[in-house]
Length: 431
Image (cartoon, one colour):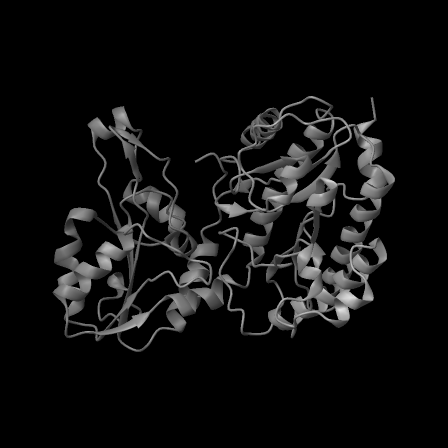
């Protein structure tokens, strides 16, 4: 891994919190992701399942974590099963985790090789009443491929049909939604790397540069700073491309006078950052562009103030809609009649701001978090309002990542990343 070792106390504490919420005499199993094939002998780069990483720090394929807090044998209350390494694997792929290295990473004493799984699991099955299975219940999940976790669950329930079944996901949604100080430090690191990339491209962007050239500058800076690269597929959208919310082609030339919407950020140690900035190709906003930009920035600042403990996510978005409506009226994009006659299920402001303002962020860009429960201290949210005007050939979105505080405004993990229009212009014209 490119990242520095993580203090194993994070994973020890995460397992303790998960185990405390399990039913008596129950066992939970978590699988790593597959290495997904592309064609011939090509595969996608391995990307670990966030849940097993959250609970163990193990960042290796073909790994399984078993938690059985009430097991009669103390050494079987936490078990890791790993792919056994050998000289051939070490030569061709690099050395895999040893039992000693796994303990150092995860803080788990009992480590078996994967070939012992069925034998050990049979013994454990005679001692537990309930299996916790790990299903993906994220509100945005749309999974067609059968995952390694799903295959294992199918096998487990067929082999042990007499056991009760419970779900790990509700527990993980609750726990992962609130960040530990070590997690916050890792997320800050991801944001700091993102800042380096953004400052780099401010000195690079000029008329006739290509979107993919900007992408290359960013990934260079991210990897140079121990990131795997982009936290998500980068959006580098110049001109009218900004009005396509998930524009990812990044293959157009940036023209003088246009704006570039940059939704680009780094990951670090599997933790994500999520940044959006909008900058002028020529280094200076037109009066109209700046007016729209400042309106979006105003909504972002005011929306951020609303993110306090006890707030409900759904009501928060209603209040942000009111803020945006006021700004759109000021810009002349809406008039009073538009607002008076609006469809309450699709308010008038949605014509120019059609997506949500905030989502949980952490190990996933759209992270776990139960949206029907009130916001809590140490949750981390994005704040990302935007105004999109196809008829004027540009769109503006601004986004930071903020940590909910016990009292007062959230702490902005991206507070050092330039955002004010005048500051952006000054930095782009520094030379």
